[in-house]
Structures are given as structure tokens and as C-alpha cells.
Length: 279
Image 1 (cartoon, rainbow, N blue to C red):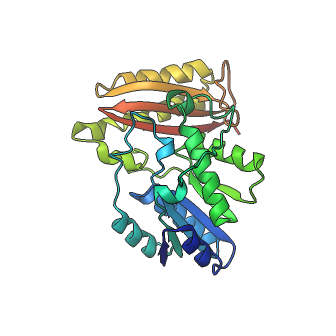
Image 2: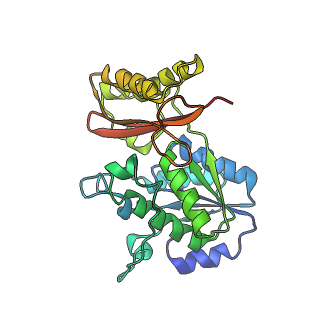
Image 3: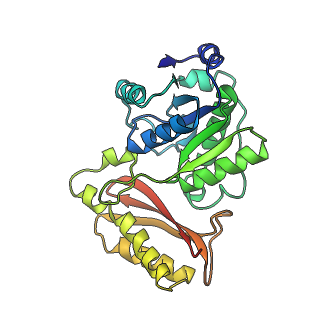
């Protein structure tokens, strides 16, 4: 496994990789969710590239950029064990050199949900992913379903900008008690860890209602909200029952939907989602 930092180093190593090349973009502090993406890329591609970059442009001014967990040495050991061929660890100066002034904005699907609560977040996500795709030129790029709106935004951007890449969305990886794996889970302390399972409990309660015939969108939102509100350590920011493609909130009876939510457990903001499908 090679590890590089500069663009020149990246391009020199990329030229030697057999195709197809699979890319797994990460912000580091890797967990089993990330590694599942690497393993799928390993199965489907001749070469696997992983990027590690805590992207400042997707953090708001009051968010956790400075304290976001980092452990690059551990990350590199995990990636080597998973069979990664090349790791790119660019600095902020490499990604956003002096005079940088070009950003990517995906309208529509980035407007609600996370986009509404985190202004500028998806501009940062779209810009950094566009830069990664342009620099590495993978044939396949792997993302987790846990960041559901992000996957919709990236697919839209890739189509609109004609990136020659297959965007592969992989299932959310969960702890045994249902908590979606996330680097931010490291912020949970004491009773907060147990309380954090309320997100999955809310989603599965709504799914159970859907599967037994309760198909009204507002009813499903109320089930999720009530489940979250019953947990004293949880504070609901939003719950959503939306169209999986447009992310517009649904009304009335639904045949398929993306259930999603953002919840504060203590001071830690967590997100999670489930897809509903009557097929």
C-alpha cells in the first residue's frame, strides 16, 4: 500500500494502477462502515484508492471541525489490512490552494433536510467529491447509505457534470443494538450511548407500522417523533418521510419513502435513515 499527499505524487501512483479503480472517500477515524466500503471496492475493482481528508468546507462555523476525531496511523493500518492499494491524505493547502474560488452547488435535492439545517454543507461535500473524482478518475466510487441525502446529492452531481463514474451506494453498517456506525459516536458519553439507539428504534417503529398497513406519511413522522421524544437524553431536530429521489416531504398514503432524522443525544448530533418500499 502506498500513501501520498501531493497531487503530483497521487498522479504518479495513479498512473500505475490497474483498472477498474474504486475510490472510497473518507474523513478518517475509520470504523467498520468505512471498511465495508473498502471490502466491496476490493471485490469489484482491480485497484482500490482511499482518500482521508477532513474537509473544512462542509463544516459550519459552529460545528466540530477542530474536534473532529482523527487517528491517521490507525486508519492506515486498517486500510492496509483491508487490501487498499493507494491512500491519498491531502492537506487543506493541497485541496484548497491560495486563490481557490470554484465551488459546486447542487440545487434542489440539497435544499431540505440536512441542507436546511447546515447551510453550505452540501456545497462543501459536492466540491470536495468533485475534486476527488477529477483527481483520481475512478471508475467506481463507494458511499454509505447512512448519509442518505449525501448519496442523492452526489449521484445528481455526477449525472449533471457527466463524471464517468459509477456511484455505488452500500448499506448502513450498524452496531449489534442498531446504532448506525459513525465517527461521531466517539463523542457519546455514559448513558448517551444507550440513549443513541433511539434513532434506530424510531425508524424501526415507523417501518413496523408501514408493514402492517399504516401508510400515511404524517402518521409515520408522528411515530418517529413520539419515539424520540420519549427518550430524555434525546432532542429531536427533525424527522422526515420523503420521496427517495427528490427528497420532497410526502403527504398522504405512500408506497415508498426515505425515513430520516437528525437527533441530538447530549451534545452529539446523529443522523440515520431507512428506506421503505411496498414492492
